[in-house]
Amino acid sequence: MQHFHTLDDIQLEKSWLTIGSFDGVHVGHQQIIQDLVAKAHESDQSAVVVTFDPHPQLVLKDEKRPYYLTLPDKRAELLGDLGVDIVLTYPFSKDTTQIKAAEFVQILHQRLQFSRLWVGYDFALGKDREGDPAALANLGKQIGFTVKEIAPFLVNGELVSSSRIRKSIRAGKVREAAIFLGRSFEITGKVIKGVNRGKSLGFATSNLDVPQEIVDIKPGVYACLAVVEGEVWKAVTNIGFRPTFGDELVLPQIETHLLGFSGDLYGDEISLRFIERLRDEMKFNQVSDLQSQIKADITRAEQILGNE
Image (cartoon, rainbow, N blue to C red; front, side, top):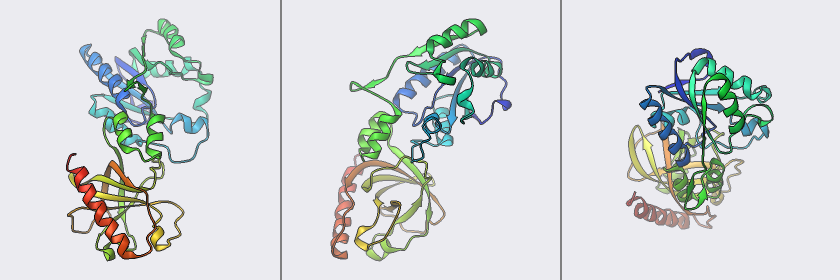
């Protein structure tokens, strides 16, 4: 898979194309992409995905809070795993919102030479969202491509969408999110220096610096799988404000205890896959009560993760 951030670096002779945000690359996205890839390759053509950064909703609504299920490089990696040949992460700005649909599609067509365009049932692009599937189909007749409109994708009778998954994660419902994602929700961060309080309690933790753009998961204690340099460890992760110790934190901290691990991880990257929420963060009157609760959390996490 090749990942580009500008059209200037691409010139294809033939391709099949889909356009969308694809945040999270959830099960609905996966179905579209897998079908597109199979049919494009059967026709000996490249399978191309055009997506955007920042997410159009963040620009259109001027939204600032943590939002993403997957950052651009991770999103491109997931799309590549599905067989996509080329991912273009197109820079999206206020200026982009003023480009007419016909102009934008013609620019893409000049570079990508696509003969098939796949879009979602609710898709629209261009100024005033004028480029809906019907308008794109008419445009395709003029410049030489056909449009396939993709029906909504349901799981257990419920529409799958990135916004629905964000809602689950913000509520701490990580098992529910995993059903729609087709995998566990995952965050990756670099291990940074902490206050070593976990070690003093007998449960050494790694404090993670996670990109602020990632959607905010509900504070609490979670059973996770932690990936360090390709090796998977069972883990208990706390996201919160450390109320027992009276820490005056503005943002929740993410710290994880890898079960059975000993060693120094400072500076390393850890990817956390959230399997199940164990409980709310709690304030304990005595440190010994906190230690007892951590032991109970570990026992429960072992039971949950033993089935993963």
